[in-house]
Amino acid sequence: FSINSRIAKNALSLRERFDTVAQTPEVYLNFYSGIAWRFETFQVCADYLCRGFETGLSTGNNRTGLLCALQATTLSIISGANLKSMLNKIDYYLHLSTTFNIASGRNVLLVFRETVSVLIDKGEATSIEAKPILGDPNNLGNTMRNVYYRHEAVRAFWLGYTERCLHCSQKIIPAEEDYARLVLIKFQVEFYQALTSVDKWRGYNSAKCHGVVRNAISLMRNAAANSDWNFTNKLCLLEAEQRSLSYNHREAIASYDASIASAKKSGFIHEQGLACEKAGFYHKRNGSVRKAMGYFKQALECYEEWGSSMKVKFIQGELNDVQMLANNELARRG
Image (cartoon, rainbow, N blue to C red; front, side, top):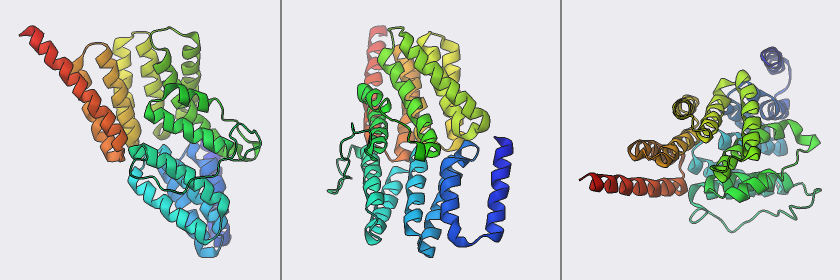
């Protein structure tokens, strides 16, 4: 990918020198949502797609500009941008989709909005009356099918709905006309699917679970070889969970800590919180309540920064629980 990335960057440089500005939204859309995320940071790709959106509006290419905005939103969610700021951006995009009468773009934006609203507070105070038109998600010809199942899988993962996450992630079928962009979604969904499989099958020594985790680790290892920034934290977390299944204590803790450090370096605040949360549960299961408390406190801080009051509330409940366990332990000793 290093050679391909240099070729692509040189091509973009030449385009900026010799092509017209009107072509920018289309070029940025195809390159930064379909190719560049393999070697550029997610945040850089999102920034360029935002530029494509702005250029599209300024040149009258509103439809392509809005497509850039949709892909920028996808990358922003994946990279853990602040949820409340993201919600404001989506509301702005929705306003523009109405102004320029782009119904299909508005429909997808409403799905994005529901996802962000769920991640913030389960939609309790941030939802709106307008809802997307989804049609029948079981209809393979439904153009909203993949959008629906992907977002349902993401919501279910963060809500802790194990069966729902697994069901929806297995329903996603790559479409040939949008395959390049869906490859990125494949990475996100397989990451969540593997972590959810561990939660479901922990303690059962399931061959299916081990297979799902091994496949996801292989996928992330190959991706991390091209982009340490985007994928190493995910690889380390999957390895930590795999090692926790085999009771490989020292290596599991080292992998949790490596995932936390990598996510912090890359600015993925949500996945930093996720790694802290998983490490907290690992120590809680093993009776190390003080260590569990330390990791849960880190997770709480990360989720607060992410803007997810839903996850903050959940982690606060875990903190209360481990504090009670610690108090009981002190009482027994006393």
